[in-house]
Length: 227
Image 1: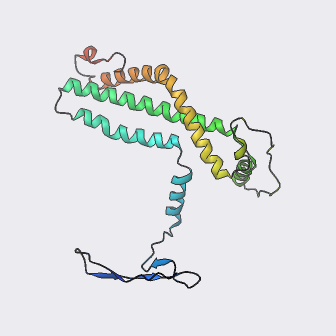
Image 2: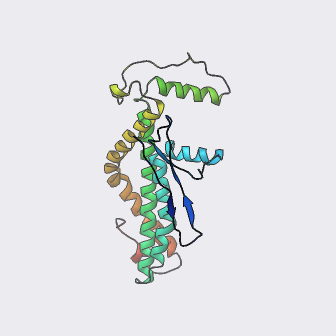
Image 3: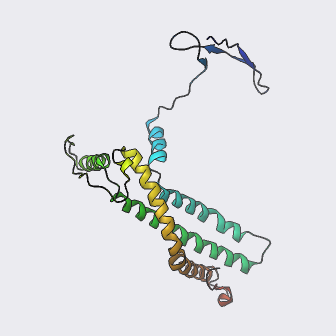
C-alpha cells in the first residue's frame, strides 16, 4: 500500500507564509510511513541533559515536598500580610499561623518521606541494586569495580515481590520511591496529631510574639492550638 501525502501550506498571519512538505518515506522504500521535513532541535549541552535526567530519575518525593514547601513559604505569608480586607492584628496572626503550618508541615513531610524511602532500600535489594551500590562505593574511593565482585545474597527480600527479583536498578528505584511515599503517608496520619499540631502551635505563637514584639496586645494575638 502506498500513501500519497500532498504538500501542506500553513499560513501564519504573524510571519511570512512558509511551505511545509510532507514526504512519504520508509526503510523498505514503499512509502508506507509518512515523515515530515523540517529542522530537528537537539539538546547537546551536557549540563542540561544531566539536569533533565536528574529530574526524571533522582528527584524524589521528599525533594518535591521540599520544593512545594519553600514555594509556599516564599508566597503565602506575604498574601496574608497584604490582605487589605482584614485589620492589622488579623493579618499578623494569619501570617504567623501560615508560617507555622508551612514550616512544621514541610519539615515533618520531608524527613518522614526521606526516612521511609531509605528504610525500603534495606528490604528491596536484588543483584542489580547491589551492583549499583558497590559500583558507587568503588567510584567514591577511586577504585575500579570488578564485574564479579558483588556482596548480594539471593535471599527473599521483605518488600520485594518475586516479579521484581530480576528487575533493573531503575525499576527498583521507582518501586522504592512508590513504596516509601505510601509508607510515609500512613506514618503522617499519626504524626499530624502527635508532631505537626503541637509544632504548628509553638511556631505560630513564636512568630506572633516576634511580629508584635514592640506592641502591647501580644497576649490577645497568641493562638491556642495553631488554628
